[in-house]
Image (cartoon, rainbow, N blue to C red; front, top):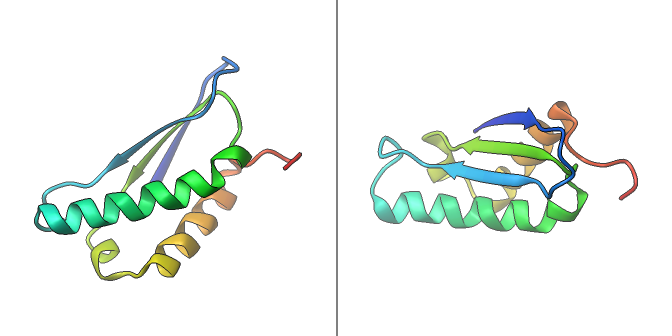
Amino acid sequence: MIVSVLSKASESAARIGIITSGRIGGAVARNRVRRRMREIVRVERSRLLTGIWLVIVARRPAVEADFNELRAEWQQLSRRAAIFSEES
């Protein structure tokens, strides 16, 4: 997956978009990946910095990956992007 971050100056809550293109597979596969990614982000949402916009682009290997593999990839990319607040 790819995680893009845009830092905004506002103090609003983080905004998140998840993209699953038709190249991933059929509607069932795309929706399964999207549901898994939404759940992973939902659990971590309280730790996200305020005022950022995230775009998560799922790639083809996300279809074969299980939930724990997707979560590990998200955690690695989010640590690299430094999008978690220090207080939580």
